[in-house]
Image (tube, rainbow, N blue to C red; front, side, top):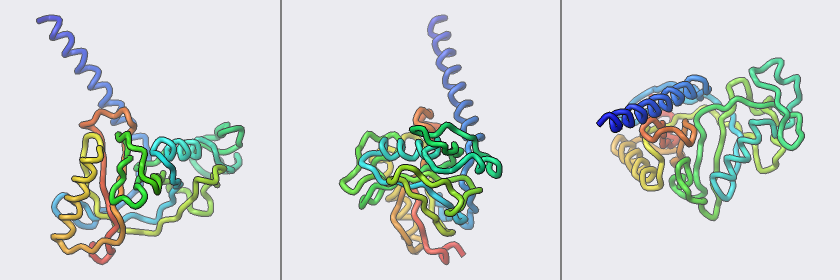
Length: 231
């Protein structure tokens, strides 16, 4: 009995420590700002300001993530002067570049070619479809399309996204293929019942590191809607 109790206490301590680390990561990671302008059941209608993305299309989620992570870690052509006017850390760069390290900003946006929903989001082992996996990192607010450091990898591009309204449904646990499909179906059903017109295809937004405990994960499926639907 004592051994079982000690084991349970030990497991509880590890889970508690992981939960605290997860909360710390969320607190210290910049998140793209938005304003909730309406709610339809469990779906938020959010107004997002203009944003800038570093975007790539690859054969797998791992390859796409690697390209983007190298970009924010220094695989860019910015020089040291950039750090004097922006909260970025000077890094040694990737492959000898003199780029800057760019703070990670949540969420990570993923979609999968012609598929309705990304089947290669965090937590899935799928390699994507023939059209590739599109993944994008949001850049911090201080950057616009002109001031953002230029990627040294030609497969990474800087994309300016205008103000938009997204319908967003939030869920936890791992974003498996089946769960993503189910959540998108629920999102679209809610919008259809409310006669909210769509303006794009659904995609996934992830906020947590891969090692985050499943029940603490913040996952979202989103789709752009006509702005008039939120007025």
